[in-house]
Image (cartoon, rainbow, N blue to C red; front, side, top):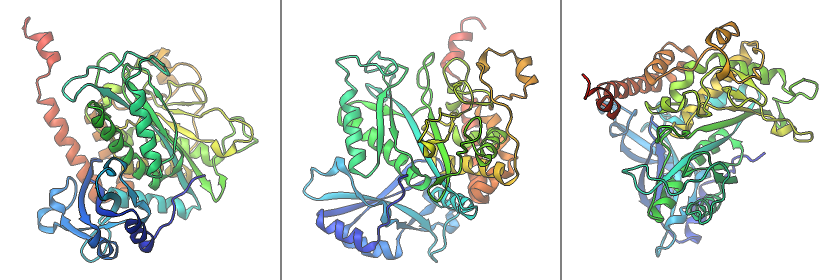
Length: 446
């Protein structure tokens, strides 16, 4: 199982010198999951590693109020790497993810990276390490003003000439040059939709990798004169883009989710964890599917989950357990299928872990698996089996989150209130907007 490599200040300074680095881009993430960045010269690097670099936090979404705006970005040496799309210049350019701290050195509680670290500490107190492997889907379009596809391919299609094959190839090579492991890449179900799967690793490393992945996909697309988007549902009538998150807990080198004697090869910890995910899924959905557009994907008929259930083989359920292969005990895992690739991965991993840990700590009982197609059941049959739906829109999801002690605990008071406030503003803007649908449907008849 891959884990975070340990680097220090001396390693970073040595690598920067050997690679002829002139500029270092310091990256961090706002509450919505957008990468923020500023650059320093290599001459400032040692000081940045020791003390951090100051910036105005009041200008960053979800950060400090204007009366307490001073923040410090402290680079994490473990995240130092060269930026491959900037290596044709005379000087190399590197990037490092930062932890955000106050001027006195104390952690800033609204920093998504800090929030994830706090949730990982909660797991660590139980002797557990959280591993994830997300599958991030995306679309290539000819530009950012339309949804004109590059191809009409489908799932796993090879349709020469495939204009996206080189884009995926270059993206994979760039990710691997940055130390990010890739398992495979392929065409997805919808025209011009693609997927590159990152190799399973610890959650903090993966959250950094997911942020880097999104930037890299867009940079490579721009290099080829096209546009890549992680918008969950850009085309009506087509499958949207998801981020199925495979996850497991380890005790040392042992997979805490595996039990050879169990019918499903799932341990008690795994069953409690799944029960926690299911019980709190409505509460965490505004974080794992955080945009108005996210709920255009979570509708029946497009392979996205709508109902709260679990199964082994059934891909219509919210949670799926990939098939166990003898000798592959470490691969035993839970696949949570509702998140989309436009979420903030630090917060999404945090709330999924928090929900699962709640199930473990409170010994939740797991409901029976659902091996039938949930979409084919009548509403009465779903009610009889205790199968509830996910929230139908962002506002419903926000209301569920607002009353959730699990999410409040996972995000902390600052981020919890800031996130909800931001999402309510988004919803108000959306519901006041007159859409093309309304004009086409009503203008000529009302």
